[in-house]
View 1 (cartoon, rainbow, N blue to C red):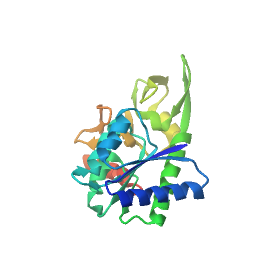
View 2: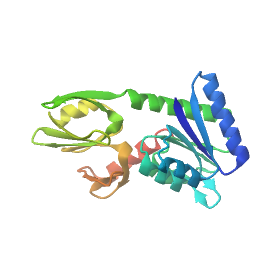
View 3: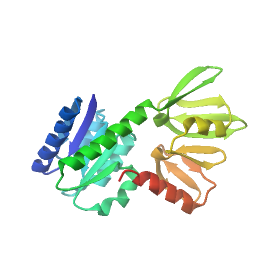
Length: 238
């Protein structure tokens, strides 16, 4: 089952979006758990109490609340859900880079645009669920989901893979070989000793990438090149 959160402070817009998402589910023979929220605070309260969503539709303008700010708080709990913004203007698109928005839809929402965004979200969820690699060390064999890997670092032919759920795992191989195993556009070889998952990067400094976990990963590329790659990754799908 796919869990979808809808957030808009205008009841007619919220009802229309609910109907469009429900129509998509029926038309694709899917089971969606759809929950509507009339404020960003209500959405954050539900997430803070342990509710998770695979896809979240967020209105950018909700009274005094900025949907992009709500999205940033969501990312503190969940780095993987697909965030889709609904807005009267694309002016906030650049602000959405840090929250890795999947899509921006212009209001009033049209069925075709919602279908396109949901198609993209379902493809993204499918890829994230399916992509994994397998590695072994003296302690056993491991299946690593690419979506769980935040970054990997190499030291003396030992690669330490930092994972959100599985913790830190060490394997005896070269980082070049690990990079080839991952073979995914979300990973950036930013340094000879570091491979980072751009999905978890929220800021680029002059010498390092800041991760959602609070860690910093240094890079040896030019800051301009890294910022360009990060912006292109964040904007992919917008």
